[in-house]
Image 1 (cartoon, rainbow, N blue to C red):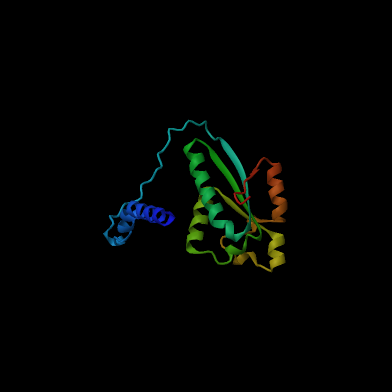
Image 2 (tube, one colour):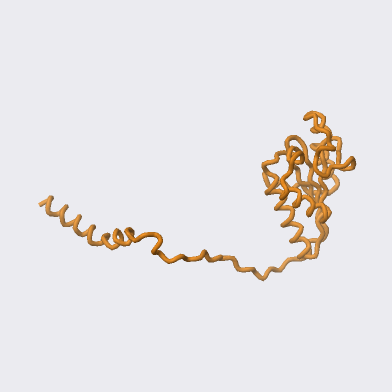
Length: 169
């Protein structure tokens, strides 16, 4: 009796799932291509003017560079679109200045675009000294871009109403 119940149960499962197995045998090339559909719909946002925003963005690791540069560019667009002005200082210290030695063409373009929009990139003198780097070998760095201590510069700017924005945190 138990054997017959198992056979009936197995037969029922096979009958129900057989069409699924048959569909699985269809070659992928025969399946119609469906373009992904974006679900984004631009909202009708209401927001007051951003006014003047002062930010300091610490950069201590070149691995975070692409994300931070993209975030700054997006913030510049948003503040301009919403009637504001963004005052950004990127403070590079520790391993955060290494990318300036040999930036890619894309990084140079991003930095040049951000500088054209008023973003300042400052470099820690302590890091230059500790790493034995001549600042003349760093992309676009001038005397005026050197600060005594990158770590102290972040606190200095924060004391002067620059908000520390670190998307890596």
